[in-house]
Length: 288
Length: 158
Image (cartoon, rainbow over all chains, first blue to last red; front, side, top):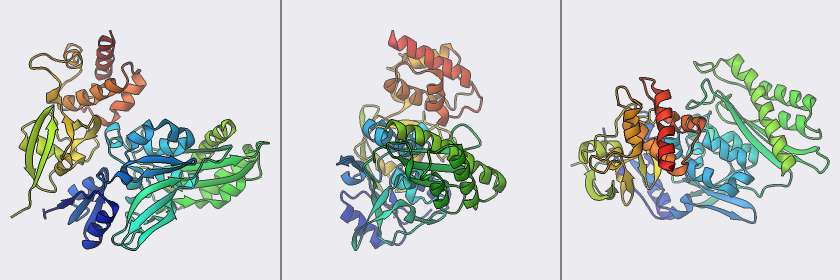
């Protein structure tokens, strides 16, 4: 095995300079994907830049209701943040679905996003909730909707030297609820064959005024289903609306066939999961 | 000459220093450099939990951490549980309840269960099963493991 160089810079600027200096450099956050890929020989690494000594990557803060979650904050820590969980339970629950308790001790939302797995649990939840990724690079900072980060399985839109430093969640709208559900062949410790994130906002009369529906594991990247959102908007999120939304979700699927789930199964279940997630989101919206 | 990193950490309360290469995992360091062979390598990919340790109080898989990342941290392994020959209630009850067969998963299960009881002194069966979902026992002795954790929790609460 070739020798791996390790650096643990204390600032984003230093991390960016290191990442820009070596085309074989990778960011190390929790390592729950990267170290597995490294050890299995899937990924050749020259340099790992451990970002966990950078305060900004490791802290969660709230400003005027909007949240900034450091890209390397562990799932366990997000789950222990009661205020964050109260505002964005769907996102926190989605992160909590990633792996075991042990994996939760290290895995992060930023890492889940940048690993660019089509089945990443946190991604549809973050997309539905309107999260953005703050990206730092040699030319400064930019902020993009999280769905613009993964571009194909294992690949991101980040340029050489760029890294995600934080995930931003908007201030929680009044009467908004969101939820994420996934289907796995077991009850725990598996990879989603369908993931569905739904966010919806109601007016005082209980009519849906805004919605966003995102699916995971049914296409090479997260799928935003505009027709599913349209099926909810203007309705009381009744059975007819939910049925139309579920059909729109199934229609948007372009899944693979593999040992975890067939194309037919994934396509059908995408609608089922989205419907169940929408009902949880609706319940949460009514109580917010 | 391969570059080695000099790392200072605390393991089971004792200061330790070691040299390791960049790609060595914490599990490799524990077993091969610090001669703490309680943590086991089952899968090497974070699925089985046999290598469970805590780092600054957080339960993790040591196979998914680089040894160099240990700099400045405090790590607890199964070797740090007993006080000499004096087993903790959790360890003793695992023996009394026969909550192990081949024993390969046991160090990881004990470390994980201890972390659970530190956070939740009275977990119900579902909580225990989800918490330990990342600790595979291929002898499939899960019922006895769960019962032993509950019994230890009750004794520790008393």
